[in-house]
Image (cartoon, rainbow over all chains, first blue to last red; front, side):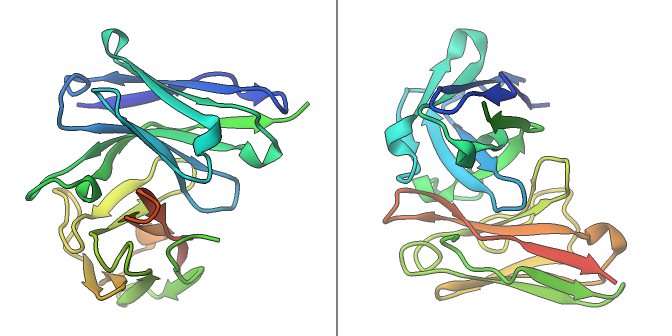
Length: 127
Length: 110
């Protein structure tokens, strides 16, 4: 059974860098079949995809956040991390990590979906 | 403003059939698969539909998805109280090179 768990500070000062880690349990982390993603949801608003990483280190980022986002991987620890720089109150949200998988045919980059999610962690940006 | 457009709310009575629409463009829904997620407050979202109309194991056949052109729909038949949740459509956007979500539809079971 795959499980993902987010960890990191729940409060970040404006202009500072938000850092979160997702720890993955189960035997899928080293597999080349999956992407690993970060998604967030501000209170009362929609889900927003932040970016994803393949276990080779290849990344895709949301263009609206690309200049401030870094997603990295530590395969030895079965973890992947999010860094979001220069945060403002608009970055206050519940942050989820998720696994992306693809089944049922040829796997294009557009074929992947989020099949396992962490429970989410609330990050508040405030002084 | 979300890239994919959903109605903010939908409602139905137990046993009814409801549909939730999702509208996009040629760079997302028009050329890629659509996925649907159910989100209960305080929990992680769960996958309901993948590749437009496929159900993961464990998802009841009361849930069905369809796609036509640049629009997609999620249908829920035999509505139950436990279906009360937020529903999100999602797709890959070729222009943005990333996943995009709809704004979400809050389903109320009356």
